[in-house]
Structure formats: C-alpha cells, structure tokens
Image (tube, rainbow, N blue to C red):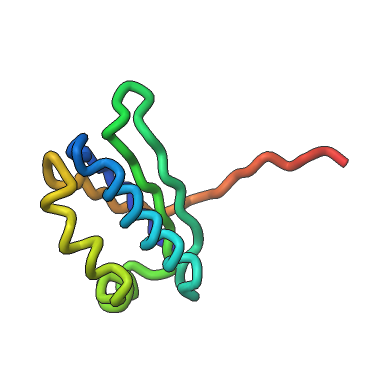
Length: 105
C-alpha cells in the first residue's frame, strides 16, 4: 500500500539557493524510481525560507531500506545540517483517495 510523507524544511536564508539546487537534483532522480508515485514541493506564502515537500511512494519499507540509501541522496543528506535552521518535521500518512480535476470534453 502506498505511503505519503510530508516534510517541513526551515531553510537558513544564506543556504537557500544551495537547498533548492540539491533538492531539485534529488527530486529529478526520484522520478526514475519504480516505487515512486509523485511529489510536490510547496513554499509557505508567509516565509520564503519555509517549504513543505509532499511525496508518495509505493512502500514505506522500500523507502527505509532502499530509497534513503540511494547514492543520489548522499550529498543532500550530508548538507542538511548546514542548510536548515532546525531539524525537518517529517510526518507519515496513508493515502485514502486521490482526486484531480477532470477537464470537460
């Protein structure tokens, strides 16, 4: 069963550009993973340095055992202490339904 993570990042202002560069590299690589469903990055409208990442994967165990160990994540994980003003807030959710707008034809 699919699993969704929400991750809140409070980024150091001086590290903002590096944060976005490294995260973009990780997100771009994730798209090729067979267990990956989707991800969406949001920015807090009241703070240019606060982000929420919403990502869904096929298996929580696969994320723990395989995805977090991928080589393309190494630089990202190593840099997080320098990039963030505080530890990430990570929540785990089980999707119940997924709705999208259906364009009328």
